[in-house]
Amino acid sequence: MRPRTVLPALGAALALLAAACSSSTSEGEAASATTDAAVTTVDPAGASTTAGAEAGGSEPVAFTAEVWADNWFSLTVNGEAVGEDSVPITTERSFNAETIEFEATYPLTVAFVTKDFTEDASGLEYIGTPRQQLGDGGFIAQITDESTGEVVAVTDASWRGLAVQRAPLNTECVSSSDPTSECESEDLGEPDGWTDADYDDGAWDDATVYTAAQVDPKEGYDEIDWDPAAELIWTSDLEVDNTILWRVTVPAPAGA
Ligand SMILES: [Ca+2]
Ligand SMILES: [Ca+2]
Image (cartoon, rainbow, N blue to C red; front, side):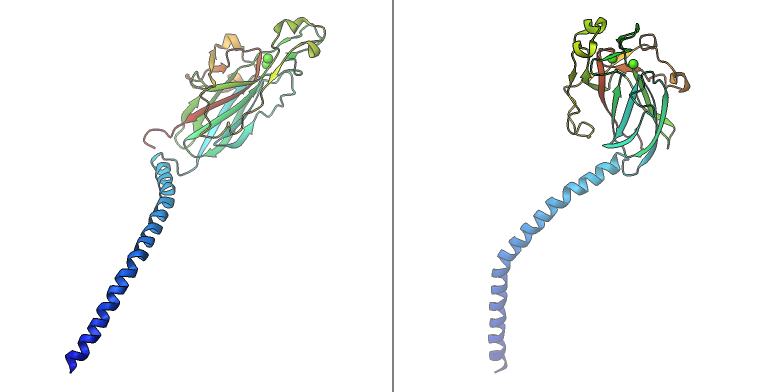
């Protein structure tokens, strides 16, 4: 009798097992699909964390930027404004060196705005005086990684620049008795997202390097111990291009 009792029980158990296997097939596929989806979601974050670690970029580092601009600048790093020239652009003669300290994570997306002084949209300065003229620009900067003491970025021909305010487009208006009316200007404004790491500056121009004789840097320039590789830059037109946007990417130092 006992085997008879056991066999039907075993049969019932096998039937249950078969049913369980049958139903678990579709559940298993669903579970598997869910897992795949979860893995897909997790992967990018994992990859990004790894990339940051491989680039030595997971920890913020202290930096010092030293800047001299004719006449004004502001500095954004990795999309965050970190400092600007303490002398307002509304000051006709503003020549001064600036030191800005900030923390950031490699790779650095460095974005400067530089402005040559203009009295108004005409692009001229000393309007109505015997000195009425087209002012000129010029800019030099270096960034030091304070954790190593190494200069990790200097202005040079590799920087990408975009002139967004240009005046006067008709330079002969420099001798006009009413330049504010007669000088023509162009103002493009700042493109959206231009300080972001992934902004495409492919259409921008390479910086033009100038000698100190060409820019004639004034007060403050000699107060900074410039790295030999740091150069005075601007766009190709020192006079007409008044507001320039600059971009450069600074990778983590090798071995970091
Ligand atoms: Ca100037
Ligand atoms: Ca100018």
